[in-house]
Amino acid sequence: MRIAIDIRRMYEFGLATYIRNVVRALSRNDQDNEYLVVGSTARFEELGELPANFRLLPLQNPEASFANYMEMQRVVNAHKVDLLHIPHTFWRPLFVKAPYVLTVHDLLDYMYRAHSRNNMPRVMHSYLTRQVMNHSARIFAVSNFTKRDLGRLFHVPPEKVEVVYNALDDTFLRGHSTPEEQAMIRGRYQVDSPFLLYAGRISPHKNVARIIEAFSALKADLAKDGSFSDLKLIIIGDEVSKNPDIRRAVIRSGVQHDVRFLGYVSIDVLRVFFDMAKIFVFPSLYEGFGLPPLEAMAHGTPVVASNTTALPEVVGNAAVMVNPENVFELSRALFRVLTDQSLRERMKAAGLEQSQHFSWDCSVRRMLDVYRQVVAEQRRR
Image (cartoon, rainbow, N blue to C red; front, side, top):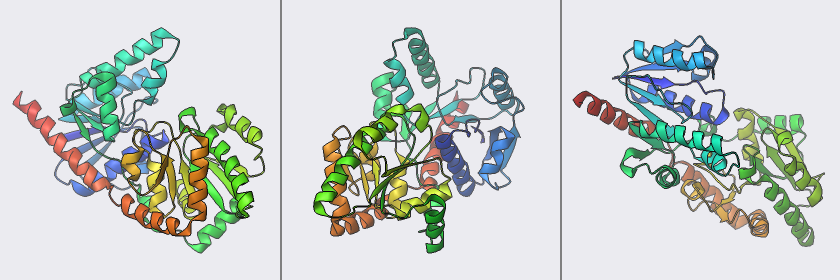
């Protein structure tokens, strides 16, 4: 088979992680088929060294331009591919002759637009999303929750959807950080107190304002208990300035001196923060999968997470799960995990075991089975 993989949206952090790991895992597990990796030259370096059955096909036009949209399809058609894998739902290859498969990470964007007051963009977005799904040969959903959403919102038949879980980036499989790495973090970021950690996007569905409110209630309970008087909350994620309610929550909760916003950090730095954190807190309102809790578990960090959407699939029984809309339930869970050492030890062991249930090698082997099925069906036609 000759399979093309679209890597054009590797400028987005989550998609970059997904594409990079899928390509690398395919290169480890399949030396028989030919792969054409299509996208901007600037993205190729992130993929690392690839074997001889992988070819890099650079596109000349700027990403997200109409010229790039047309060029992508010309390149795929010119190389007579058997299958195209599009790792997102943002464009439909209208003129590509080969069948294509999609990866659906979540339907959050559709859901937000569905509640928009501006009717025309909502209708157009819904129509285009439905078209790209209807014309795909198969769909990879990153969780059973996302598969159910595809059926509920777009009436995609379940037999068309294959659940293929995400997994950990290799960075989080290198083992724990060294004392020297932790000393570097303490010096660079002035982290000299125990802390809770949130890492992820700063957007309304991530529920960061409620983390801050729960942290404020937690501080009051800890003061009564006489423990962790210097506890901090560290928030790693970009675009805080675009969400003023986050800053307002800090001021309203009176924790200005105990909450730190660090902005974006590299994966290598993030893994050290996971090792140093007392608890990783992730009460997200909506997740198609939810990698950060899994990353924290891989480093033995106890996790408090939502009991909704895809997160129960990811964390299993290894995390304390809460109603993400109940600030006091979240605060009580944080207090319990922070102060109960035997519970912490059990959660560390369970989290490490849970994180090992997800493997990119296993995931791409399932993808390969689907690739073969789709190409075989196309050839029979």
